[in-house]
Each structure stands twice: as structure tokens, then as C-alpha cells.
Amino acid sequence: MLKLGKLPDYGLVIATLFVGADNLLTTSAITQRSKIPLATVRKLLKSLVDAGLIVSHRGSNGGYQLAHEAQRISIAEIIEAIDGPIILTECAGPHHSNNCALDGSCQLNEKWCELNREIVSKLRSISLEEFAS
Image (cartoon, rainbow, N blue to C red):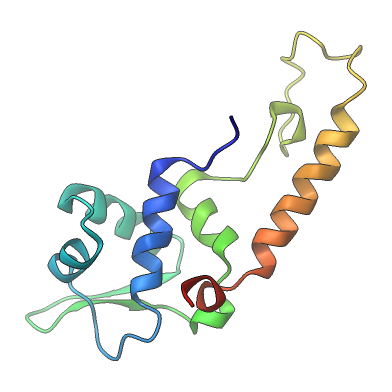
């Protein structure tokens, strides 16, 4: 089964909460709206802040907001901020290490690389704004 992990899925849920938000969102508001546990929300917000996708504002009136307009952030960026590069198979990754037992005899390496590029391209073409609507 090919599926997105729980953390990047939750990261997308959290990121969509910011689309159209008029003011800063606090961690407690995000937790309440998303139903994602507080510890997980904090972990994901840290990853999104570290990636420059969300900005944190400290203080009594603090909270979080998108670092850019939602139409300028792709869902690929959010997934990569949490999970790292999007790679379908080890040989399709940017740092192919030749650790595959089939290396040298497999006919599928180029096919996996091509498919990986197409999927990443599609994910890059979908903005957070589109995804949230």
C-alpha cells in the first residue's frame, strides 16, 4: 500500500486551518479545531516554522500564521517540511545509495524515477489554497 504518513497528513490538516484565517491561530485553537493531540500539533508547527511556511509570534497575543499567501505554498512543501523528500522507492531518491539488492539488474529504476518526478510535480502544482477549498 502506498500512502501518506499520519504526520504529513496532520500537517496538511493544520496548514489548511490557516487558509482564510483573519488573525493568528494559537496552539490551543489549532488543537481544538483539528482534534489533533497538543503534543503532535506542537511538533508539526515546529517543523512548519523551521521550513519557513508558518511564522510564530510570541507574547500574550501571539500565535501562528502562514509565512506566505496560501496560493504560494504547495502541498508538496508541507509534506516535505514534515517528512523530508517525497520518494516512492529508494532508487528514485536524490541520494540513491546502491543498497538495493536488485541494483544493476532491475529494469524499473528509470520508471520509478519518472513516476516519482510526475507525482512530486503534481503535488507542487496544488496550492494550499486549492487544497483547502
